[in-house]
Structure formats: structure tokens, C-alpha cells
Length: 298
Length: 250
Image 1 (cartoon, each protein chain N blue to C red):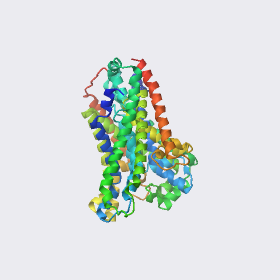
Image 2 (image 1 turned 30 degrees about the horizontal axis):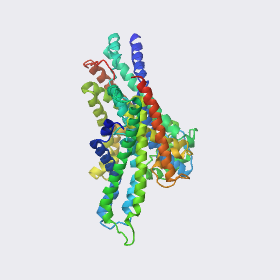
Image 3 (image 1 turned 180 degrees about the horizontal axis):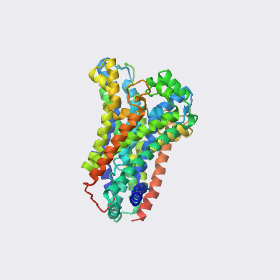
Image 4 (image 1 turned 90 degrees about the horizontal axis):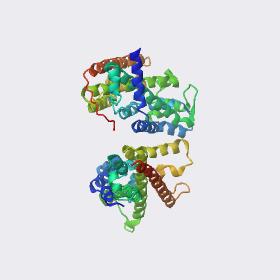
């Protein structure tokens, strides 16, 4: 019980450092601006068509696109720029607990911060489109126009018929939130692992490499590169649906009953497995980590 | 303006760097169009380059780049000197009033001058490349577009000054040098969000209109300039108050 208490106290202390921290304020303001820029297309389309939007629809359409997920997750690099969160209180936590307890508290802090950040992104996207929104759990006319008329493809909003017919807005929102959360956690835990392994720069490079791997592993890129015919393009799409973390995080790239793409459960298991491996790796690496206490935080 | 402020704010290297970066960003934003022009080999219509220059200078790329670049020369100067302790030695040689006033004037001038120089660079580079490719009618004066160029240069000078002072004030208030560079960018986009999503009556606080030289509603070009000068004076006053509070702690 004592160890659990120390874990929560250390996590709370990390959140206490958010007070007056301009880096945290800047991250959340930039996230708000990013939500505005990403949801602008959907909002403008709804205004032009003089139709309404369901409250979470803007979040669903915006973050059904892999590029939006990538951009939103990259801001976490700014939020966690001071990884591995060594402060003036760290020596006292290490003396009273041990390295394992301390690193578990850091991982808990990372997970909770990521969840808070993504919740902020969700709320921001909803608030930015509040003027046109209704709360009932049905798709709006805007969604119907985007999906059924093909306008969505024309203006690059990924509103697809399968999402409309296989789920409701709040259900889709919950699935997308979970997928982005898992993707972001994997990215940040990779950053933490490499940070402990080789230093802060290696952590940032590893996170960026992870993002680049997801971005580049795209079926359209492969089709252009290898001049694939349509039959092979479908196979490439399925393979990339399994291999690319960014595709795992994209709601539309899942099996809705007639594809060989991963299901939601399979994606959660894959991400969960990677997270467990990373947590074990971080705890193992912490035993060899060389703490350097500079004596000042400025 | 104190001499050492003048030397640092108008240092050639930083100026050239900021001006060149803005010019490159603006030219890259229209790169597809320029490549198509060179590939087609056909003559351009009269005033094509003028239209492209004006469209580029009032477009989204400039909206994005402007608030960051004009703060780079000098907006973080006060907070840098405050944190490094140089301020104590400086205040031994001049009064607080002169020091704060020098910061305001230098930031005002450096922010405006960076944007003016880069605007002139863009106009010169694009005109030099594309005007010779235009079909100019015999009876038309070339000087007709200079009036609009002058208007946009004046507007850019004022916008650069406003953003420079905004960065100076935010960095002093938050005691963080990075806020000098990112603060104006965030404020600009927050104003855009508030206007476009919630308060569409506050047209005078909509930054996209500040790059628009034509009349916006009942607000003419001159009135917009006056409003921006009033904004910069308000920011200067706000910085005065915040800086005095910081100096009280020394």
C-alpha cells in the first residue's frame, strides 16, 4: 500500500509542476489552434450547406484522417519535452521509494497527461463547432451529404458510408478517442524508453521516426512507387492496415465485417502488447539509468 | 533609443536572415504556379506579376509567418537582459524611464523594418523575374502599381511593429523568452478563432482583415492603419507598466 501511495504522490507532484509552466500552457493553446485549423473544412462545409452538425461529428471526421492524428500527437513532444521529469524532488522520492516505484509513477503521469491532452482536443473540437451543433446521437445532414454524395472525397473529409451505417456518433467518438490514445501512448512510451537508453535527443528522434514510419507506410504512396494494379493495391492496403501504427489508429481502416483489416479488438491487443513490452523495457532500463542532479531547474 | 539597443536590433545578420526566410516562405507558397509559368513559355498577361505579388503578400502564408519573424530581432531583449542580470549594469548607466522607452522604440522600429525589408525583397525579386515576361500595352504607365506597393509596405511596417511590441509585452509578463516568439502567433490565431466561430461583430480584431488593403465594411485603409497604431500604443503602455513592475524586483 505504501508503494502505491508513493506512486500516486510522485504522479501528483509531476502534475503540480504544471502550475505556471508556460510550456504546458503553450501546448494546450497550440492544440486548440490545431483543432480549429483541422476542423475548419468540416465547419465551412456545414455553413455552406446551411446544415447542422452532431456535437462530436467534427471530432469524428477530423480524426478519422491519419494526418490529423499525426499532427495532434506531435504536440505531445512539446508537452513531454522535459522527459524523464527529473526535478529537485526526485532525489527525495528515490530515497524514500526506489527506482522502480519512481519510474512507474512517471509512466502513470505520462498516461494521465496524454489522456487529459486528448480530452482537451475532443472538448476543443466540440466547442469550436458548438454554434451549429445538436446533441442527439444521430448523424447530421452534413454527414449524410459528405458520405453519400461523395463530397467528402472531393474536399478531403474522410466521411465514409461504412462509418455512418456501422456506428453512431458517440460510439464512433469513443472508438476514435481510444485509438488515438493508444497510438499516442505508444509514441510517448517509445520516447521515454529511448530517452532512458540514449538521452533526450534519442527519445525525440525515436518518436519522430515512429511517426514518420506510420506516415510513409501509406497504400497510396506504395501504389505510386511500385505502379501497383488495383488488385495488388487492395492487398497492399490490407498489409499496411496491419503493419502501420497510424493505420491502426485510423478508425476507417478497421474491419467492419467484410474486410481483412484488423478489428478494433485486434488493434487494442496489438497496441496493448506493445505498451506492455515498452513498460517492461523502461523499468529494466531504469536500473541502469545514471541520474544527474544539477541543483537548479532554471 | 539607447545606442547598444540600436546596434543589436539592427544587426545585419539577423535582419538578413529574417528577411530572406520570409521571402523564401512566400515564394515557396506559389512555387507550383511559378513552375507552370516557366514550363508554358507563353507570355504573361499585363499585371500578372502585380496580382500574384499582392495575392501572395495578403495570403495565408504571410499570415502564418509574419507574427513569428518580426519578433525575432528584438522582442526577447528585455527578458534576456532581465534574466541574465545585464539589466543591473545597464540601469547604473541610464534611467529606468529611458531604458523602457528605448526598448519600446527599438522593438517598434525593428519589427516594422524587418517586414518592410522582406516585402521590398519579395516585390523586387518577383518583379525582376516576371515583369519582363509580361505583355505590356504601349500606352500604359508602369508606375500605376507603385501606389498599392507603398500601401502594403506601410501596412506591413505597422503590423510588424504591433507584433514586435506584443511579443515584448507577453515575454515580459510571463517571464519567458520563448513567449516573445510564439506569443504573437498564438494571439493572432486565437483572435481569428474568436472572430470566425463566435464574435463576428468584432471585425476590427480580425487579423486576416489587417492584411486586406481594400475597405472592410465601413472601415477604410486609413482607419485600419490608425486602429493598428492605437493598438501598438496600447501595447507600448502595457509593456511600460509590466516592465516597471519587473524592475521593482531588482
